[in-house]
Length: 183
Image (cartoon, rainbow, N blue to C red):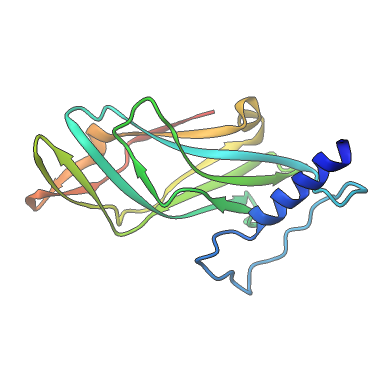
């Protein structure tokens, strides 16, 4: 039973190491070395990154398109990431959407997380709607592995009411993220 579980874990990690199939891997990215058990299973932990909207006020829908999730060590070594969501609805305050998973090798004490959005999303409020410009700088933060280990995830809580700003025309908004991260 234990060998079967380890084999399933190894297969899951191998699939998650492939990253997003829609994006070609850069040949210049350094290889990440990690310790392996005798059964060739990497030593470390897998974590989730989740995104949840808060303070949506009267917005009925706010959709943000996810472009990429990157996680690195503090020295810049890329870690294995599997993107899970391409679009996230920010008005459901009761649900933190799974954006992706990442694997942190044993011995790494802190990681840098960077979440980038695609060009445009959308919003709806009071029967009106329009484009949401999400071409802002990526959401970035450092996460201590000890904090991530408490619940196995980091949750980015984006304040919708403060983050969406009118941009030119009344039906256009720009996303200027106001957020906090919880573990």
